[in-house]
Length: 374
Image (cartoon, rainbow, N blue to C red; front, side, top):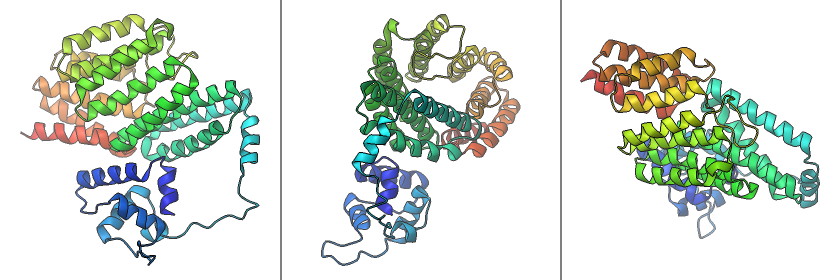
């Protein structure tokens, strides 16, 4: 069962070990894993063929926390289906041949529904469904022999992986997020669309920003911006310019960052969606809250008006976006010495972050709350 659960996460054993040990350090858990020990747990045997037995309690707790089931279940063997029940190569090839426009439309509708669920309830609810759907689409893609279907399945897979990457980042699983974006880039490449490649590269830059690798993030976003060039939809180009603006500000270049936001505003089309490329959530309200984040970061007084206006116009179903906006607003109030207003925004942000399981924003809230207590 342990090997199956790791496979469902789309990770190698080494990837899983690195993520597990990083998480253990972050949460103060003394349990650790080595690749050798994990291989033994997966096989259930020591090198001499003897049963390996149970791992140390701390290691068992770590595995249970990551994979969500008890250590007894993880160490139990997976019941092997009969030969008649196993989908063979011929069955998968047949299934993939039946992927037509209607099936692709259904898969896109499912992706849109998962986005809606993630938007309202957060990754803590939606992430598992997304990773399961990734596995399904990946299997269809790997057995598809029709070029047109392969390209569309690859584009769809890229978008699913970028959604999973953003969810994992929000849940605080940085290593997992990085791997999802690597898969997104590979799928985007097979789609043959520079727009999907640019989008996957750009989203991965936010992992680098969270790690403090801001200069590398700027380089990656510049590369993504060049890849998209003028052939991409204006909505994507506006989103890339805004993403670059955030990275530049995080890298200590706020003036360049704000100029990039000016470029994003000039590129933003009247419509907020584009059938020509990857999905991005960007309209004047989202762009304003994004710019407000940078203004709050550098302590500009106008951040309060920009963020307050964005909050009043924000679609209330964007729970994660509202959480981030309120943290930014608390930051702006704090910079202006308005501590009571900052605490009010932080209280609401904390409630939202806990509700959607956003580890990323809970960390931001904790840091800011500590500054407000000083």
